[in-house]
Image (cartoon, rainbow, N blue to C red):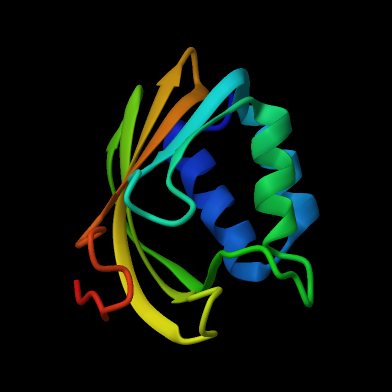
Length: 139
């Protein structure tokens, strides 16, 4: 029996939490479709849609590298997953470093993971208050 969709979500966030680029790459290689996409709120500095497992692999692996200047979360924690099968919601908490000031901002998000035949097709990120990312966002 293969890995469940919930297991895929958990392994992905654990790899980010651990700063393990190889584990992130392995999850993406094994569990994402070639046309997989992530969508962040367009009002964020890094917002928009990124398409392609290869691009996602590079993006997520880059944020884990020591000394990386790529914007990304630190102290990421998977608080809870909801659902199973073709749709899994991940509630995550993390600290976000503002690239312009270096200020660390506590944040939370819900990310809807969509799967087809057990493979990730899309991740839709929903932040508590994406119109004011410079302010702390409490869960």
